Amino acid sequence: QPLKGKLKLINEDVTKLDIRIDDKSIHNSKFDLVIYPSNALMSVGNINQQKDALCSGLKHLRDDGILLFDLHNPNNYEIKNEFQLENKKICLSGFSQGCMMAINLGLTSNKKYNCIVGFSGKIINQKDLKSRIKVSTDTLLVHGENDQVVSPNFMLEAKDFLIRNNIDIQTHL
Image (cartoon, helix red, strand yellow):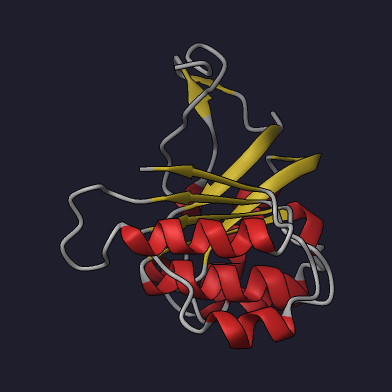
């Protein structure tokens, strides 16, 4: 728990984000990290409503802060382009297949992302991915040791692959 006491977690409706603590609005505050969890943007409605919700969160992101995107939202690319979000400000995240996509995108893009955070995934085709690596995006992989759907061994295989390809990797099983 090295971050205990250093993190301020705020749970708000992304469509009406007006951060409050003890009934005192701190809506002009800026944060180092803004996270949009799985389906948080998709659940607010159409693409225009998603953009409005993203605006609510982006106003709270420090200039040098990081935006964490879950790759399950098909509108992320349109949102990224419209808001001119640079890869270095985005952490790619995904669970299972989303993890597989995050690893793939995070290593084959023309510009490096801030990081990849993957949960319970794997690398589908190591030979193919190796031939397409363009950047070395720092990666954190997390996997449940009792996962019966995606074997924890896949995380260890991914770790080995990433080390062999000079990608900074951390894992947690």
